[in-house]
Length: 257
Image 1 (cartoon, rainbow, N blue to C red):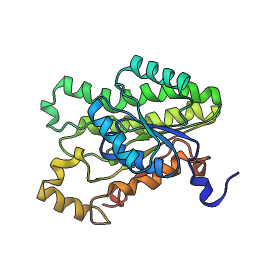
Image 2: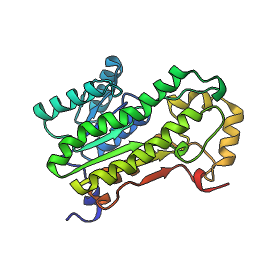
Image 3: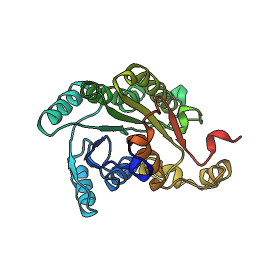
Image 4: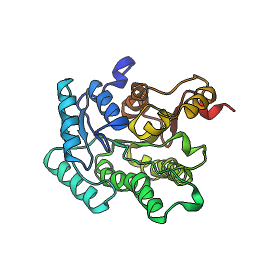
């Protein structure tokens, strides 16, 4: 068994990251590539994916694009099955695809609620199930779901998002409970408030910035590279006996009143 820093090596592994043309997904693709993995970036916008591939290749990564809609169960399964048949195993899957929609709960549109659930929860089930079928046959695999501090906390105006991320954390537990016996490790990362395109409106809000810095024990927003270590840990053999866990990377916001 590997020891020391070799525990964190991803050499020879292939990692699929959904929603990885920008933001958290792109940062995790960069990080997993730097740890030795071949990364497969995913999204629905072919132009953004091509740009992500170019940026990753320029940094020396082994990378390719796999465009499909993670909210479409049939498309996710067919695309992943074809990749496994033609290219080889997906050893690591990071379910990062997600969206936010803010608004008063009493006025929240039903279609917006359903779209948010499809993007944030159904995609995790769709891709998780598709890759797990192959991982189970091999007796090994790593699935990492991107949850949120909203898996444990709530704020005004984002009740449906909070519900979706609570579901991701609990789906992670269920996946681990069902699939650990087959050699899979299924865990989640729960980011706090990070500087991403998804949070652009909050970053631009001076009142929110002031509140957040006072509310977070570390006193600031998270930087995307600060998520990479957690992902490498959960993707590597260093986490071989970690299952069903949600790892909060949040500057302490969930532990402090």
